[in-house]
Image 1 (cartoon, one colour):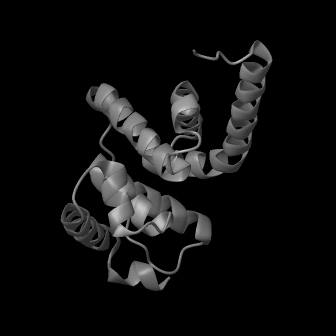
Image 2 (cartoon, helix red, strand yellow):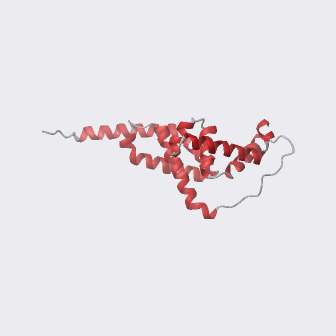
Image 3 (cartoon, helix red, strand yellow):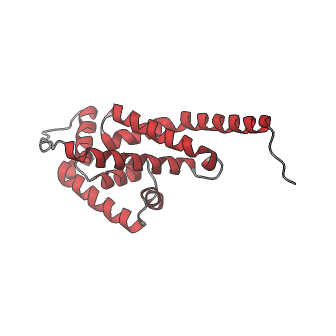
Length: 176
């Protein structure tokens, strides 16, 4: 003999899932938007990527809401959205001139722009590694899991990406 859940029980369970999703969205949206912005350097596109991430998560919410590490899952979905967007847009990218030389210490806003310009010169996977490791302060293993690569790949690409940033920015940049 099988028992079916009453319509009231199903409604309450869906309401509980929706409430949990709403709480998750409120907590995760600022982090996801900042990470997306660091990857694409466009607040409007970052908002679109964040919304796409949340929409994909909502579609899977009934399956993941109690079992998955939601922060890690959301990062993975966001990075996949960034990579997909970058692949679609790759033919329309513009190459920017080299970074200007700095005579002295720059104001904080100029430092931020300079760092963002340098980050944009890296391949998208290297950008993701730098952002996840050094901005979001994720462990090597967590970044590897999010990007679907081995920990050694994360370490190697991180080392190369940071070396490239040092070449672009100069050793004195970090001291400013």
